[in-house]
Image 1: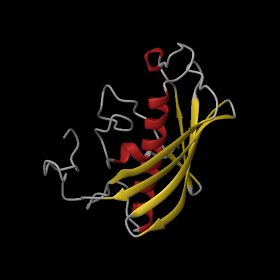
Image 2: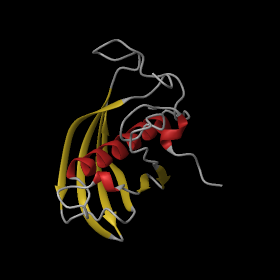
Image 3: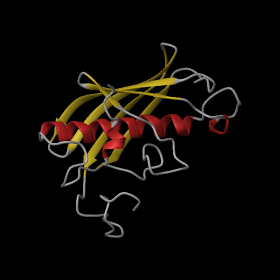
Length: 165
């Protein structure tokens, strides 16, 4: 039996890149593979860049960002010996995102994301991620995630922990 994706365990449900409750989002699914996280995702024609044959660069950045931060969240729960999504909730935001575009990413083939943790220090987690199609690396990313506000958003004070919010 396949394990549940990080995103389906209730940590962040409304994010555009990874939230299962966001009908217009990418709804990526990230899974453990040893100490790393893997994801397979299929772009749609409306995700194209300047050419209808390649994936938009901003979408590539969003996929790398969301997949990496989901690994940071899952790892924090794992280090604390708790199930993903249990209270108090764990949330990470992006402090830094650096993307290297190495070759055009075909839009008509499934892409694979593989993220790994480089370092954890207090509330900060440094990660790297590769985006590949048919074994060819198309983009790489370096992400710095920072653990934040389990009690609510610093902007509105709204809860970040409930489904459908």
